[in-house]
Image (tube, rainbow, N blue to C red; front, side, top):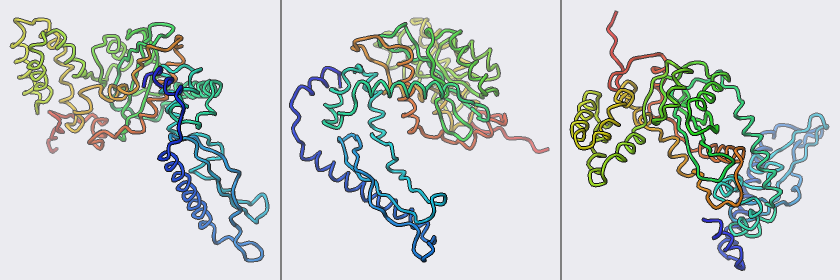
Length: 414
């Protein structure tokens, strides 16, 4: 929703919504039941403990003062139960709810909403009004001062994260891309993003830094920093677009890492050099290349495309031909991994919702703000990333086992 539309909603008088009130009442009831179940389960684990009189040491002791939790359906009042331990102070057992930590004031969904709105163009001073349109009276505590404090905390978290130790981790594949935004920042900024695949098949955000476009120097700085913090061993494969800066820097820092050009980027580059009337047919021919079951078939379709378009559209044919080797690298890796390593999709799909398209913000964004907010949103998206298919074969890749057309090469018996 555009900022102006959100603020326009705020100008209207908010009417009590019976359905929302019902949801809020139900949420309060469910939360109370869940907290009771949690504390009863906790006490059951210590049922064997008795005091000097033979009574259970732990007993229910009413509730803490009522407080409200900001949620997506507005404020939900809640009272956290508490226990009393009859043992001496030094031996007392303390109950802390995992559902309702002592200092929780808003749900994670609200924490994630704030940076999303900020990147969508809601300025700090307009947050109270914008959130009031979404949350009603539940947004009262989210003043501009609160937003500034949250931004400060997130910036500290990002700075700590970007300096974390990477030694002891094994990254098998890397996806790299430069993401451009059209927000009004201090300088023309490009976000350099790297996602790594760990040896257990899970993906994680490895780096997000700003750089001048996608220059070799910018990528060199990012990769060199990763190596200095513990990523010493060369990953088996890196997947990226046609940015020469990244590949030049990669060859200097991780010279043994193989290259795989992204087929999505390459397809777009080729189609841009063709008339619209022939793009549909050309796209199918490109599709036939990377979907071939083996490298021989891919080479055959590769040559067919060049022969079909070389005469009339030499630039399109040249665009494909120049990267032949690094476009077909994936055939030398397990077939189960092909759908993951043919493109930079892990980055593209994440930034589909995180794209920085804030053209209507009143002031300029600082580099710290953009990096911090993008980091927060990607970290949230990371929770939903799935493990790579056939992750058990990553051990073979790490060992250097040779794969031919996606199948492990048979070794002759000694």
